[in-house]
Image (spheres, rainbow, N blue to C red):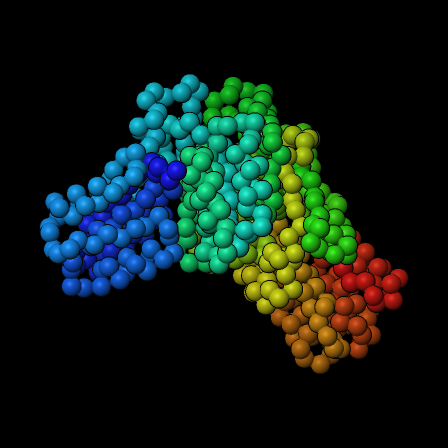
Length: 501
């Protein structure tokens, strides 16, 4: 039996080549995805239908009908109405377009006749909403994982959620799988980027569209424990020891994660995955206030990672406050982009509570950009952008510790940039251009000091010509005296160069 969509959008089309793309973009990017789009060609003489056919190739919700001759607007709409399968019909002129939330708002108006008790006024949209938690899931070429992720979301013990999938224009079947889930669960909405924009922009899109009182981030190759939303939300309700009005609820709820390996990865890759995250994000069992929050994660902590977005739940008002700071940042970022977002969120937050439960499952995905050695150049470019953005943000936020945090995180990124070269072949020589110049350039980007090239060379304790792996590890310690780097060096030496982490 064929699926009955909630809405049929009927678009009569006659010589509208200047407008039809805008119209169709507004339809396929609706936050409510359970729709069909019927384009009725009224035999115009321009390229309107050709443009519509191009859209139909990429979105199977679009169908195109053809009148036998030019019949006019009345008959053309009637043609679409005769074949429409939706529960409701929405007529749209091809030279007009819909607001992104048009179908979602109409559906809620139809089905939510009376407001529920205890609703919060959403600080981003300014309206009363039933949704308590918004889950934001960026999606790009994750067909092997997206079903597992969505199963964990739709089967939450806490049902009062919305699930926002941001389709970042991948080339596999991820979006087709997501649409099948969206047909069965109206809490799922699929937003499509105009082109591949990366994780930073995709999460940002979700932040802008979220309607929940709280927001959580989920990577499409990870998944949630069944009680994740319920426990995070209940902790928020109980964590302030004050009245449970929205203004008094905590800005950040922090929980723990489980780290899962992959049967498709080697033993060494699985060990690296466990080792990388064996030291958890700085944990505070007691509530934190104001500047204590950013200090706890970025300066007090000696562990890694410090800035993950996915092991926390954020109040929507904090998200709204943070959004303007991201307007001038290059959006095509993937590597360490969560550092920027969490730097702003932690700096602006006024209250923090935690729950000592593992609610998130972080999975090894050897094909992700953070694990893929083929993405070497892209990762380095992203980290250079983030170093620059951290400096600018630290001057805009005017929060305690902001500049100190930006300086520390920038040094950590410089260390990671140097470590990116550890698997390169050949001999690294700090005294003759190449890597030496790269290190000098990195040092010159320092926020508060500018070491000279000579000082960098004198600081080296490795031979002039040494293993690229060993050289990169030692050189990275100039920027970040990190425990894991010493583990890398020790394992490399003990294995006589056979094991490289």
